[in-house]
Image (cartoon, rainbow, N blue to C red; front, side, top):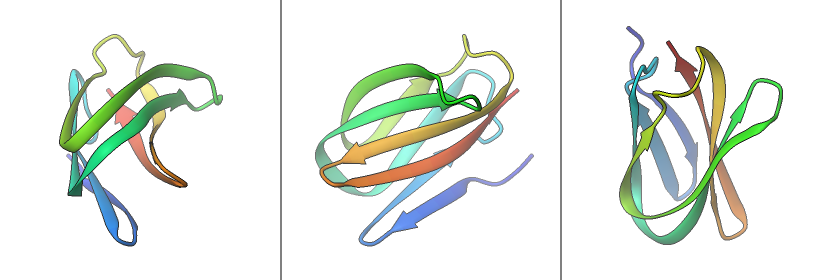
Length: 88
């Protein structure tokens, strides 16, 4: 199994685990945020999920996604953080 992957853009860092994932993906931010948009895209660029998140932790249910590569995007203000997810 691969270790958690990091996507770092100062001053916020995002960790996603487990990755690869089967059912749930946990997102941990290096600092709490007041509100951000969470979006998940498949390898073709089609958006499969959109929700809001706040704080420094978020749990995402990926159990219904088909196996493959996904891009988890956190949009906070003018910044976007992207973590690649492998869904088993």
